[in-house]
Amino acid sequence: MAQINTPKEVLALAQKSATGKMQLPAGKTLLLAFLAGAYIAMGGLFSLMAGFGFPGVAEAPGLQRLLSGLVFPLGLILVVFAGAELFTGNNAVLVPGALGRRYGWGKVLRNWGLVYAGNFIGAAFFAYFLVVLPGVLSSELWREAACNVAQAKANAGLKADLYLRFGLTQTAENFSSTYRHPLDQQAVSIGITLPILDWGKGRGQVRVARSQRDLVETQVEQSRTDFDQNIRKLVGQFNLQGLRVRVAARTDSTALRRSEVARRLYVLGKSSVLDLNASIEEKDAARRNYLNALHTYWSLYYTLRSLTLYDFFEGRPLQVDYGQLVKD
Image 1 (cartoon, rainbow, N blue to C red):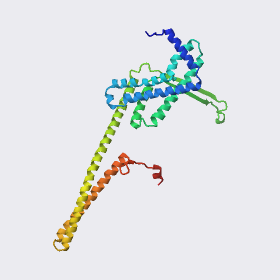
Image 2 (image 1 turned 90 degrees about the horizontal axis):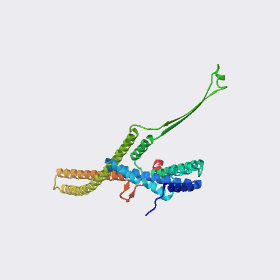
Image 3 (image 1 turned 45 degrees about the vertical axis):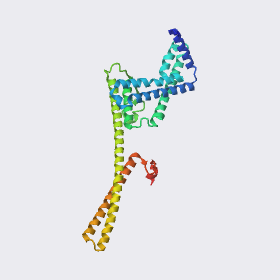
Image 4 (image 1 turned 180 degrees about the horizontal axis):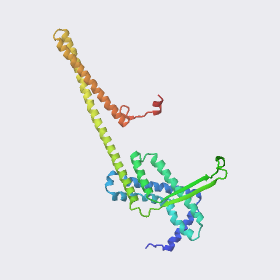
């Protein structure tokens, strides 16, 4: 049967772990904190994508939260397995040792400062280089909706404002003596807002932001579906127009031969001028129809080319040096 540690033994092990953390060099502490911030940001991204990346799941808010909750611990698991330094974890681990006077509060504050800075830098690094630059949130509407959710969550927490004001004042009978012996006017104020009870306003804002994001996801998915359907429709029209061009080409060739036969018969005196004019009009009409069919054919081709950015003749994506175009 496995032995379970007593609370005192658990506290002793926690203090031993905290002592090891306090002995880490500053550079290694920052590196481990950087990794922890990146891991937590990764878990947050996966949680966001799993819980709110599928428009069909928006109809079941409970399922959204379940998926988010199942995926987010991935970041914490990586922190534990990799031995990274997380600010929230160090808050709990280092306090018992400081209260027991195994080390001073100065070292605790130093560790907290290094770990907090490393966590922030790691999370920012992951968000910019592994989310923004690769275009994970490529849609502008989707990115704006995700930012609205984050802003709603931030507004629901603790708020603190710091104001600092400095000025000089004095009175005198003439302007030249006004600022000879000025009096200082200084004011510093700190305002802290702690939402103890907001009657569900903060949660309501978060829910509204999430609903807006779900709506944006649905709109983006609908736009993609409409785009695919439009491309399929244009491809069908293009293929059908190719058949029309071939039929118009055969008709034009036939009308040209009939016109030549009518001209020869007229020269031999075996047909009237009315028959000759009719054959010429038929030939001209067939040629116009053929040219119109060609115009429609190539219009559809270049429409598909501009929408797909693909050169179907060369079999490769279109590549254009826009700087050279502007220069020309």
